[in-house]
Length: 545
Image (tube, rainbow, N blue to C red; front, side, top):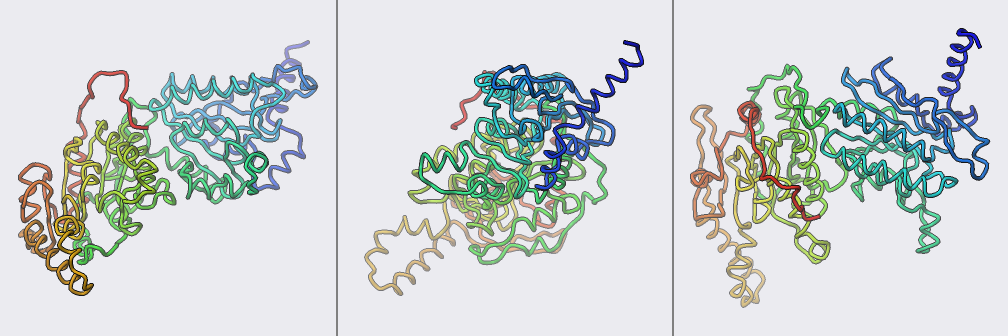
């Protein structure tokens, strides 16, 4: 064969590999509103940057007639490219070839790019669209999944891992995305479950649809498996690019800092009046977040699950930060099982990848009740405490209003190595609120009062007495700005009358004017940029899972 013919043969093979599955399967994919594996890669990566690896790989099976069906790439496209000029590794499952089912060689291709990504310190993006294990290969498929899981585990905390679910993801296949840092699902076209509707009905008798069992809405609102829900694949791919813009390529790098046109000393006067005078009245914490971050841009994570706590990424003066904030507008911002899990996982991610943490506190405590106790609120609350306590990144905490009981300790308190702990003049730090305190202190006496009106009257008087003794309102004057705020300031450790008195113990570093919050956070981030802290040498901690 001549040299020219060999080159032409190579080009023909490349065209065959790029074509993917047969045309009718590609058309079926498009009819479902889905893209092919290579179309997704082209849309995600910088134009012309994709370098495909293992294009000519085929399966090795000779059972059940598979030897008669040979497709180049064997159902998954793997390689590397760039996003905004930064190297990423990627694999994209091809549903048009064997339904994207995983074979031995399929798994080896994924493992190869994950191994390389760890060597060079680059993120891994997995686009999932697969019918599961290739049954014809039996135990080899199971071994292939386990090999991928092991890479997910080894890469955890080393390089960012992002999973996009743009089709079915069932059985053992779901555990790879579950081991990654972020999961993105597309509405209507994606699903995730360990056992599908048919098996569920056979075993339990429950008749349920694919969407209701493991659709994007279910995992975005009920299970918390999905961090983002995209209306369609295009939005999902844009979310990946946006998410990566906040993240370093690996755990040895700092997050990418960009130029910021938003003044670092910008003041927002309306923050001085945003907190309602009635301490039981809700407000939207997102209004504060959008006001203080650069250009109002905040990438909220798991926004539809455990909505009583907010997690997400933003920038201050161009510097990426992770934000954790209680949400008084949902369940009064109380901490429960799901909120604790959500925040703990996010805190640990930020700490692993050198992303500073800004915590905004307005928490009345942990959610009471048998449901929470039976569900293990003790263990789950301890996860959040553990996450904050072991984190070595810069940690800045701003107490906005309530910070009661054990929840005060958990939310990045000074005792959990908070670097800078600010408080607004509206802050209340106490063992519990006045009503709860009086129920305990005066419970026996109150129970003797049979008349409801008289009981309410006495209760109100005792609450006021508690406020006067432990939380007396005091005007706090900001002489430089001519602003006066009034609020109650109970404090856990003494009968102090103001948050300023509380600050003398060093648990609060300063009481700040609300409208200066952005400026104070940025100045603290600049100061803490060179922070160096190491935890005691050990194999690893035993987080209460």
